[in-house]
Length: 77
Image 1: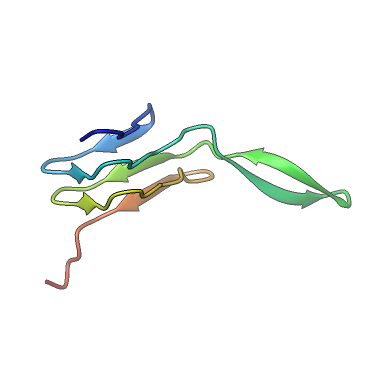
Image 2 (image 1 turned 180 degrees about the vertical axis):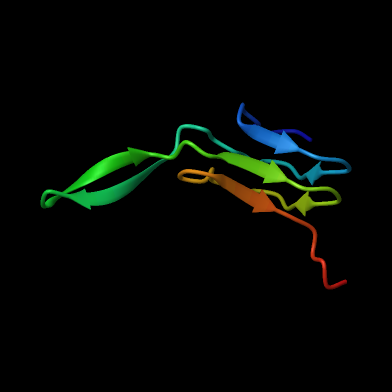
């Protein structure tokens, strides 16, 4: 789709649909309070988008801090 940004550390499984202007930006940082100040902490995990998932337009997905962010199909259907 037009305007979709996809970078490394993102795994797409089967039949994934990403609508226009969807993005996953790998250089995300969180902030943690350390020694009385806010310190930038890199998020080094990855994104896993499971089978049969559709992500709507203008969405953004952040990677996990340590492990993984998982987006999966609703199992209750």
